[in-house]
Image 1 (cartoon, rainbow, N blue to C red):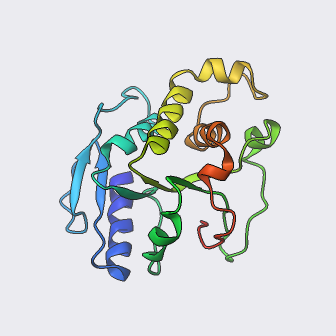
Image 2: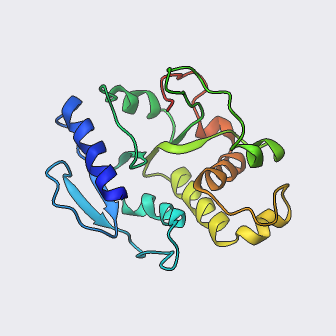
Length: 195
């Protein structure tokens, strides 16, 4: 239940950053007091017959009512203020997380779910934390992400992967980061931007 997860995430944010504005982007409604606004997906549900609706992520750029956005996956919890992330990330138009941590707060080196990234020598990014500002670069980024989802069969035909590989948001973001340049889409010196 991603809306319920998002409500818990919003609560965690408001607990440590009460002034932050939080928008739920969804096809579902919520009466949670922790959301400042709810925005429906601009193009509706792009995967109506699927339980895994990753393609809907391509709408986040257009759905965001803000000039600067930090997109967080719904199943997260924010234990302390991250307000300073806007200052750090605003030097770029798009910043995608490139480090993950385990439950011991150690940088993870587990590669079992990253074979597509490794086999294709793509940027090792995680869409769970993504910053973007309304800009030509961010618009291009999300246009590429949408193209990858909509034309996945053509992409995987020229890449090393299982023929049955499905497109995940991480794979689409990684390809977009590769096309736009990792130097333009990640921060190499901000270790705190990790999950």
